[in-house]
Length: 329
Image 1: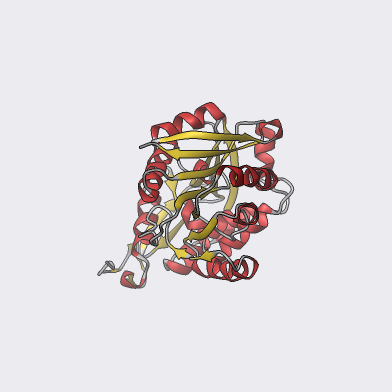
Image 2 (image 1 turned 90 degrees about the vertical axis):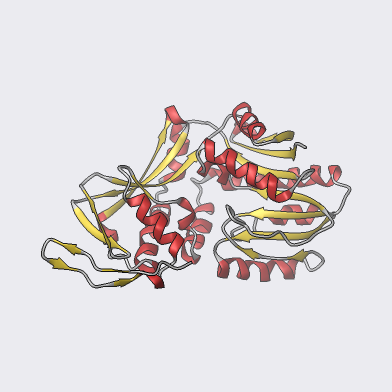
């Protein structure tokens, strides 16, 4: 349902033009307003991923500093080989937040029982482009792309096959632990009893390694972070000056997470969808968390969501972990 109002905003003697908010995406607008009205301003990390943001993330994954991508990719062929030995029934694999469809490839090469692949991603054009390329490479697999928010993926295409979810990339770390449990419960409900979930999880490690991973020397992560504000300008008729914000990421050791922020470099005000917001120098918009879990911590979190750990893989130096979970009945 569209918001059916127009907004005229006065700030002092300044009259701002009317904004017809019926033309704006209502969920994005509501969530942006709610986040920017908090004492600690925040925007949801899911809004990184328009087509431009998805490309930035692909660029991040190619960086030498960004160990999660290359570590997980080095693990996947071995994981896929073991899955091939474990899996006898025909499989439908459902990937949540599928992005560029890179990490599914080792599974499709090694696991012949995968008959159908359903990639779910919020960035439609990026998903369809990636799907076209994947179909050329794996013509014997039915590929059914689905554009949706992975929190609200909609109806699963009918299948008679065993269902396995795929959630690589340590994206589970972007949720706080309570929301991570809630998401895993949703996935269990979506896939149903007897399903499995192959999931990537980042591990706790040296803060210096973590800092480099989220503060690359080329500034691509900074551009990725700032793209959130660009989306507000383009899609919610905001008037934010991106040059008045700086990327800031650090490891919050007591909470076991990387935090990403956009820090205001001056006192400023801006509007989003006709509503005015103020920020002081040094005040930030919190855009992302990335929680890191020890194996024991993650197995406990998964159990709280109704998943049992069937198999665990750890990279050299415990740099990254993957888990095969099974839905408890």
